[in-house]
Image (cartoon, rainbow, N blue to C red; front, side, top):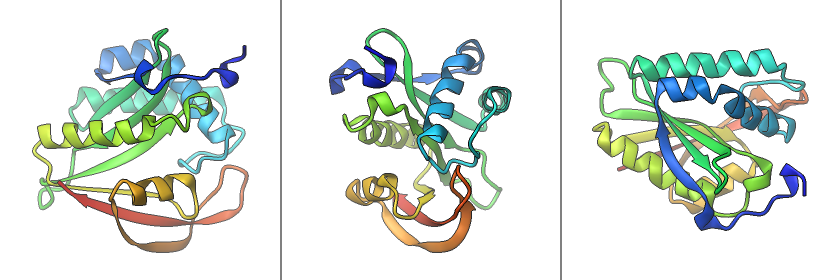
Length: 183
């Protein structure tokens, strides 16, 4: 059975916080998840084809940001310990916004989708935000995506849509929908 054909039980995932050192050690696995998501059409700031060195560079930057306490990195692992998803909470905000956090780059490998992992990530990021003394969360996602519907079902409040905000990995412009959540 190939990686993309794997099926996981929802309780077979473990979500935990990765520190900077562990993120650096597991950078290849993190890059694999990012590259799979972009290859699958996720509009997450990268174009396809995504060179591996660019994906690795992104995760090196995230690890550095984690080391500086600017963000929290959460990862989901399957029963074999393989990273199948990530989400970040950006906590380093301007002086006039210390109460706010930004949810960024919720990525779930295509082999682990539609099994409740994204909802578990949202609950885990809420907990991380409360631990960081945040009372307001914001995020954005591509308009019309599965992620947009997920955030609505999870109770996030839609602020609005900016048309032609970004490009899909294969080139066309897409709108971006902004959401918030009060904790």
